[in-house]
Image 1 (cartoon, rainbow, N blue to C red):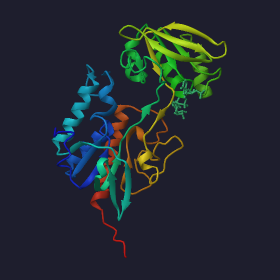
Image 2: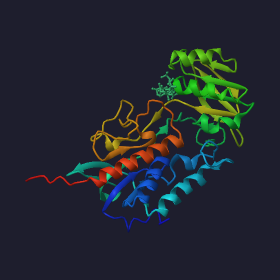
Image 3: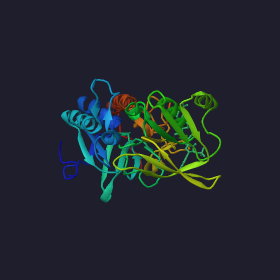
Length: 325
Ligand code: NAP
């Protein structure tokens, strides 16, 4: 792979610019590169996206023995680069459209022009911001039960949150864990009634109400949570092997808010077609509104393929609009 941080050979014009080098962006890049589109992928952290920081992945097809997140991220990159795609460090600060061309403003006042853009910046889970949360990430702290639940067979885990995600994933975790504590900051759940009923009937789930996590502690991995009961004004400790945090997600879409339609939470309004309200701009993966709320590597890669094929059709028919003076 070309030096990720060397921007000397960054061109000023591409057929397609993909923002975000996670599974959605890199799949779009593989399709676009293979279809001979002059393609740039911009990434503001490290290529591979969230996948690269996932310890081990057992549910991505084609890897029967599982694969580490960093290996899978590297393979995605290798495959895109093989088809001539450039992957470069850069953060989109602003996106504009003039005469049908898309202008991507990045660091140091650099400007890149493209016929089409795929936004695949992903979404991030909200963090609690308590001591131990970052330290034990991947060692007992998780934001994905589908990814990590199977590691907790016959163990004790906690889930933080009271929304659909916390209750659905808490219930899912009872397949593996012997005991699942759901810690919620109020005395009533936000989750839908159907999910609540299922969880209340599940004898592997214990609810801890009106409580917040103050600290996540352990030696080399998570061993204990410090909880604070807001009603009783009392602190206590809870021994657990893992903690799953489900207190909502956010998408970094500040750069697009003047151009694209976003929902109340800041996710880009686009359906399965990945088309946004602007022709030639697509939103793929977790950054778009997804009614199912199932955000997995496979759902992101599927979006990547769809967006690249539609972008390719758009680029084939591309014509510049000349504005009369
Ligand atoms: P959510 O609905 O925003 O719920 C977040 C939960 O976390 C709330 O219970 C909230 O408490 C709690 N919370 C927020 N910040 C916290 C903090 N700092 N400390 C402790 N608790 C905190 O988020 P979500 O569950 O991720 O769901 C997001 C969207 O996806 C929702 O629209 C949901 O309906 C949808 N979804 C649907 C399904 C499904 O239908 N099967 C599955 C997953 C998600 P409060 O209640 O006190 O605010």
